Image 1 (tube, rainbow, N blue to C red):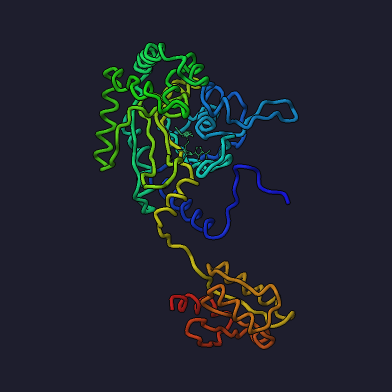
Image 2: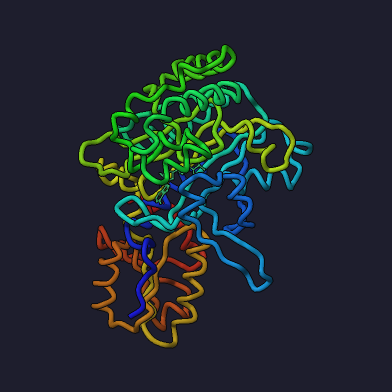
Length: 423
Ligand code: HAM
């Protein structure tokens, strides 16, 4: 038997219903925040991710799905959404033909060749947003408020917002130099990857999954001590706006994030319920004021986040969050013989187009088994179509709850159901 590829999963049943409910809520929330829906390709030129996500990140060095197409082009399945959205922003010249800031949201599969475990997949879905063209802290705070408000709408309670700042280019450089000085005597104690990070991007050392428990990591310099005045003021404003929205957060000075492009604010929201498991980061993001330029666009501020849908679904399940899912159908249509199937299908079409969830007997069951089947579907009404009903256009309808039977003409069917569906 052919099995699914490692690190992937199937969706069906109640999980599918719950997921669709969450997706609809996301769509509605994005409408209220007035973000524009973007869909970019699942594969892009490999160089986009090398330059965009960063050559020293685990994502690019160890986790991408790279391939050559039949035209010998180097392509990569996207490991995240930001680089593709930035490419689209630049390629479609949105800096010139859109309202500024451009506020984008997206949803779709991402691919990383990671070691699969609970909450970590090789194909996973992200909901993300990116906003271009405002360097104001208002935008950072708005971005952080999106996942927080989504969790609030869903009724998820056990969450914790961690924030930090890396500062602007000058502050980041000062911090980088401080890290180089600090780690110099300990370089041989670090793992092989970190020794390479030391040369290429020492900030990455703080994000190491191997060395993170070493004392040398715990006592490392903090970004917050290397901020210039502008960076301090930006961070103070972010905090002020978060306070004004009553959003609780903690400042975590070790938070640097696993991608190279961040400046100023970085943040993560984690599930802070006991026993949730190690993959508890529900979403993460931050500001990236250099990325558009790095990818050959005009100098443009950017800020965004992405949320892992699988971890969100696990958190909702973990907290037993209830959802108003549709349970049962409106009508179950029974053609009594081969001769009535065409008329029954006609009725089904009418019902479905008028908004009623409708099933028909596809399997030539006898009447008794059809009644049982209608019960399994938890159908509110049963519509029986025999020879007489087809000839006269007067239908036999049973209210499956009250067990009452009605004779209703085809013309009045929709009005009748509209009036009686609530019973
Ligand atoms: P990221 O932290 O790499 O950031 O991923 C964001 C979220 O995607 C994570 O917090 C996690 O919930 C989920 N995630 C990541 N990898 C996996 C995986 N292998 N399996 C399941 N879930 C996963 C980014 O991707 C940035 N593009 C976020 C961003 C947008 N920053 C600015 N704008």
